[in-house]
Image (cartoon, rainbow, N blue to C red; front, side):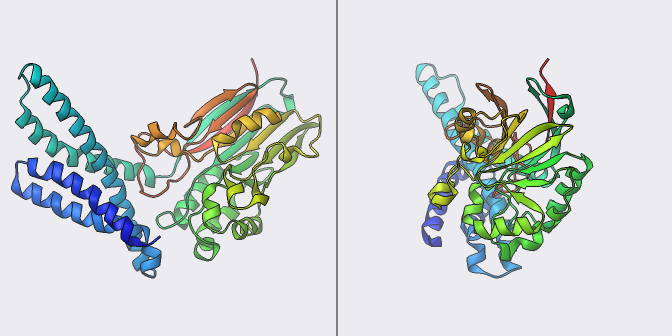
Length: 379
């Protein structure tokens, strides 16, 4: 895809916002400032997405940063403009019955409010996105859990999206936070990168320093398939992270067995038939006496197949919890679960909101997380 169609689409959406908001702003200088901001945004958003094709580093990195920040800002501008139009339309209908609402005052006040709200949400979202994710502890009750596995801890990180704006220092902070938790094992549930091994090997290098009793494990997300999946699978193995590709490992504690399996991304079969996600195949050769069966699967959509295969717990990501309002409401149109703990029959599914972010450095209403999963016996 060339930049031209994206640029045309960007200009069209920015013209809509400008036409609806700028004429209603009562102060001339504020209207001019918003016009300049919209012009910069209309150009920088597509340029940021094509930065690596248009320029070399460090210019490409600067373009990407600017474009992605403006993408986050414009997303809120567009949403608030649509909501404003809906509000004014409703007020107009009310006035048809009885002219009680001051429409001119409402137009001016809401025209000022839209950019102020969008800028405020974007600033708060930026701060939320750039901080190191907080730890969320989730207890998973397991029927008949052997005493040797009481309190077994899996630390899950997901959807870091190392790329134009997430670099080595961001990853290093995540690694340090994970290591402080002293987990039994670390699970990385996909969408680790947005770029090739050649571009990002040095940026993911801190993952080599992840520490846990039983090791670190990885399953692919959809973004690995945009970034050279085979090369990334091989590179992560070199970092000491075991890739579970329709496979499982068995971890023993005092004679009790925990089975940890992993499948490729739900959509992986569309990229390569050999990567078709298959929870049942991941159990091939599994011991019959495994006390707990845990599946790592990037997308929550793997859950029905995981339940049918007989897993007790599925750890997923992919959704980012919506990342920022109002997109968390739209995630439900594509995924069965947006975030948190859910169940299908005997299967518990935990969906992480993600440890990094994709695209705009912005999280609002959907904070990032490092998930500490503890297995506990049922009451």
